[in-house]
Image (cartoon, rainbow, N blue to C red; front, top):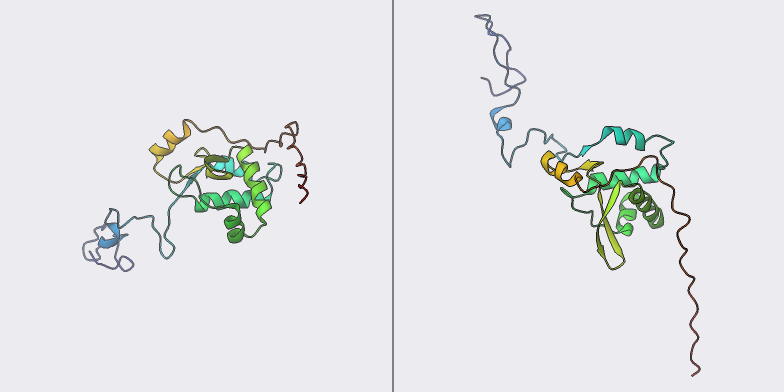
Amino acid sequence: MRSNPVRAQGVNRATGEVMQLDLFGEEEAKSGPDKVRYDWNPHPGRHVNVSKTLMRKLWRKDSGYDQNDRDIFGFYLAHSPDGAEPLRMTFKEISETLGPAQNTVRTSVEKLHLGGLLLEAEKFGRMRFYRVNPRAGYDGPAKKQVDATKDARFPVVPAPAADKEAPAKPARTARKRKAA
């Protein structure tokens, strides 16, 4: 076979025999850790398995999620590490990368967490790191996604309303200074 798949002939003109086309050259057809057929050039990358049904619901105007929420969720889908690992970026770092204000990022992440699209994965003091719910999107093998969904709650669309009956945080009282 010819090494250039673009100029390969589909029929042997002399005999009329149909020939097998070489869609990938020998180098491209090799499998293994170095070569992956879906690693398209010039922008190779990983691929995330997402629920199209859930995404269609999320992107509807009556979903309860606004454009910022969808942008933040897309950011988490695109930037999260493999498997069930959380995205270890602060709201400030996400804000600097994506554009909206830090409080907007915080509000959207809280709403996405309340709706089950993002799950809290780690907590260090006051800092919390979230991961994409594997029922909404997963970066990794299908077998691991099935295992990861066993303990994951179902995402909710339309977005649940924030619990207004939750007790408000007590107001801080000013400390009295000692007279010097």
